[in-house]
Amino acid sequence: MIPVTKTFLPPIEDYITQLKRAWDNGWVTNRGELVKELEIKLREYLEVKNIILTANGTIPMQIALKTLGITGEVITTPFSYVATTAVIVWEQCAPVFVDIDPIYLTIDETKIEEAITPRTQAILATHVYGNPCNIDAIETIAKKHNLRVIYDAAHCFGVTYKGKSIFEYGDVSTCSFHATKIFHTGEGGAIFCNDDSLFHQLYFHHNFGHKNFEEFFGLGINAKMSELQAAMGLSIIPYIEKIKIDRRIVSEYYLGALKNSYSGFLKIRDNAEWNYSYFPLVLESEHQLLHIQEVMNKNSIFPRRYFYPSLNSLPYLTYSKMPYAEDISKRVICLPLYHDMKNEDLEKICNILIDEF
Ligand SMILES: *Cc1c(COP(=O)(O)O)cnc(C)c1O
Image 1: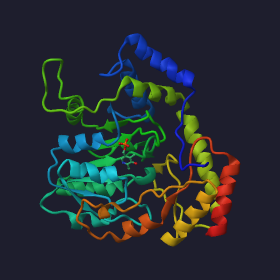
Image 2: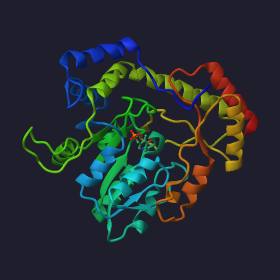
Image 3: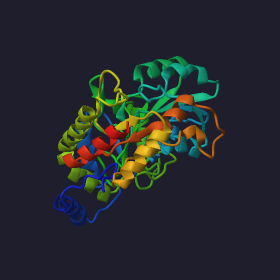
Image 4: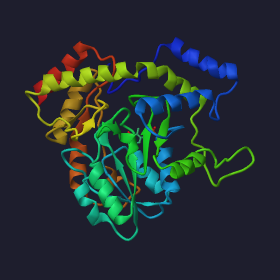
């Protein structure tokens, strides 16, 4: 079977070595030495100023909305994983969708201003497949209208924009370390924020508001990463460059093998260094997609429809039409992409595609 992705698992001895530290300490959560060490290592590797490790990649967005005091309308993209919209609704704010740019697949910055109302307080946008939003334009709009910017950078481990980590942009940026992501801790995630006083608030919000055992800065919730999660992260860090190279090789294979029969490859924004997190194909029609999916499934190949459906059609929302997001979400499929894909599997996938395009 060829799945859409495969979780990178380090040699089990590496994981046991890390776990043994937790055993020896008799300490499995509450920011023990493994979480603290992983934060330091990731801060260095990613070259970011501030990082808080969390239990998953969704609660950081909830904490960001809460910490920034967002209670009204949040401008967001319909083309993302459901978490991006769900956190807005869960925090009792109102998502206001802005359609996507059909080339980059990120929120269409030229349509943001017309969606702003007196109730708009923030923009929550996703760097889709690790491809940056138009960060500069969004920053300008946010300044002009006094809006806060949160980036769902769940796909962005290792991505840089204009020479610095993409996590450094926006008021708050978040990442997911779910098992399907490039770097993972089973479940896990992170919050990034350059403003030290805002960072301090995000920090205490993620740990019940504790100042110390008996005093509290204020209200908080539990978003802590455990030592057992951090043990996985620490075991994967030594392999992360190799994982990135392996994924680049797979991506380049697809590009080379398909370029004579297909021209709709994802366009990466200028000034971005990408991380090969997904390999999406936008096909001619949903009909063609379903057909290709069926042929592949018959051959035990399981590409996935990321992202489908377009989030403006979620059953708990009032529908508003988003022509590009709806059209593209019906036609986009992500090809299998992981660290140890075999050449013969790549060949098989490409041969099917070339026959069916
Ligand atoms: C994976 C993902 C999330 C959610 O992350 P979890 O770690 O599963 O909570 C949020 N947004 C996007 C775009 C994602 O792909």
